[in-house]
Length: 113
Image (tube, rainbow, N blue to C red; front, side, top):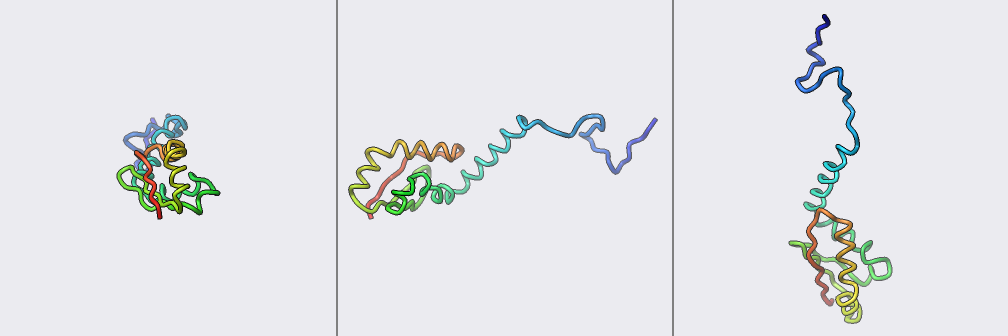
């Protein structure tokens, strides 16, 4: 009868079982960890604003803060404020929620300035 070497023995490892795991077992945990990372890093939401708003409007807006699920964005003129607030707000919120599924995003507040 062959003895296991104490150097390689473990309480949870049986040398006859494979040590590999299927990606389906690991992926939910990895995605959950990534979600927690985004939840703890509101600066990532602010940094992604130019990509969410698009290259044409990004120079005319600035994401200033993200607190308690509210993104505060400064816009340059009243016309843009009106368009974003009335027409594009639901689309922008959906884009942010798609990018950051683990982060609670309640609304976007636009400010003139």
